[in-house]
Length: 193
Image (cartoon, rainbow, N blue to C red; front, side):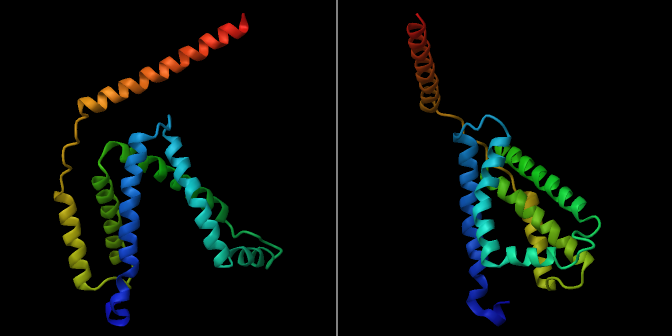
């Protein structure tokens, strides 16, 4: 790709690196700081954030018109046999990935979570090499094994302990919330009497 496109071949990988770095650090920050009460909170939050760009790209690519053209192309069968089952299966698997990734993200550091994702991609690429004939060169496969080796020897750094100031601040926040609830209850009692 570099031979045909030059330095521009690195534009998308560099953009991907920047976006994924931000997303991993931001995701870890959400897990730590936002109290979303349930595991469904972050899953719904990220899925809702993904809708506007998806709809915009679909509009830019004329996907809506293509859908309706295909939909009314044939009167006898709107959806091929089994397509709705595959759609449902894709939704179930995608939802499972959302829940499992947020669970994993809450258990490990952002770096470790990123590494887990990259290792999964490497395994997918390796499966591609074994199944199809259009894949990376021998050099690319060598670097893939280098990535797999590096990922397998990685160790997560110990997580930082909360400092006394962090603990004091969280206690203060809980105390302030309790005081606000108490004031609200007293005000309610006054109104009722």
